[in-house]
Length: 212
Image (cartoon, rainbow, N blue to C red; front, side, top):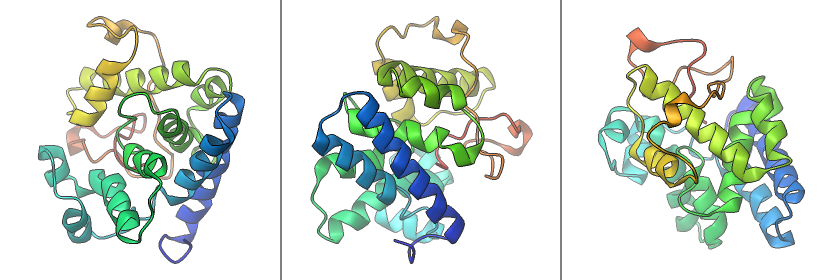
């Protein structure tokens, strides 16, 4: 694993794996799901440092955002890599793929990894989401996704279709969800702005949609 990512990112994936495991345990997931959350946390960023050309080869674009910002593909690319290596745990593969844009359907392991990725302590942000996840996984996922979508839409920034699909599947989400007073999902202080953003939209408080 250390050979696939930069040293700084390896520290990040270790924190994500441990936090995903803690969230799974705190929410009463099965022993198998707890192990899967940890495994997916370790593996989620194996494609994060690949060049754009390799990301596009491993995960052909599904939409304009993918084509314009290949970094959005690193979750799908990681899944392709793992599958080609013979890794067969579909729950782990789903969580690895989902971590960039949000869980598809009722996938608690994916939710654990997604939340851990955006809120692990090394990022220095989203502490409220991390704390909530240790008590209520669904509420934390709702907060993370709604915050991201409403923040981006409110600034005219294109949201990935998969993230919108995740958002629309959340219980209780309506057309008035933009008024929910959640703080916006924050990017790491040390990471680049979201690849969904034109330079005119760049902000230190902008949530990252695909760079996790």
